[in-house]
Length: 229
Image: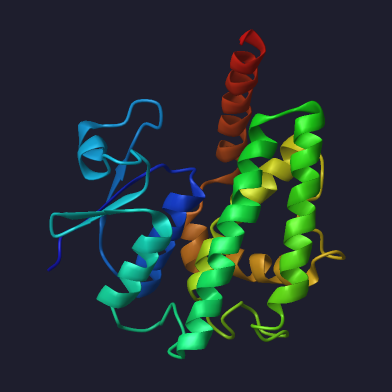
């Protein structure tokens, strides 16, 4: 049996997406919780360039960067469900939207969380613009009327976007703004809702109340530190 270890952070969507993919594939693994402020020597050894989480270690071989890890999982464990479509063009479109989401949407969640005032308002505006643009354009690549981006079953993009559902809910509660609105972005809203109802999502995603309390504490520390500087 393969030795699979996953080093990550319980509240991080980057870590959660790897957990979700491994769980979808039925891969057994050891979860190792890290401290974001005091990373272990293992992480510095496994990911000396970026020193970021998550890191997947498969039979002693470390692999950082969540999107790369997802592709590795798909190529290593070829059993259903398939995370990526077989058609090369369709695979390229999935990769495009996964990268777009990480670069143009997920990064703004961090800005919304750690900023306030005009900076936060600007981040919220950009988030809404980008998720609305994604909603408008993504229907050209993925069928409407299906429960997931990938169709009837969740795939690569569902894992990438779905792993942020808890973060989005916490942010909406923190800032009092609806970031993913059912009227403005009905497809993304329905896809996120369908993913959140999956058994693996419920088993993997953090408890919302615990997550919210921890998020409030963390945000207060960040804002206090920013004010001092």
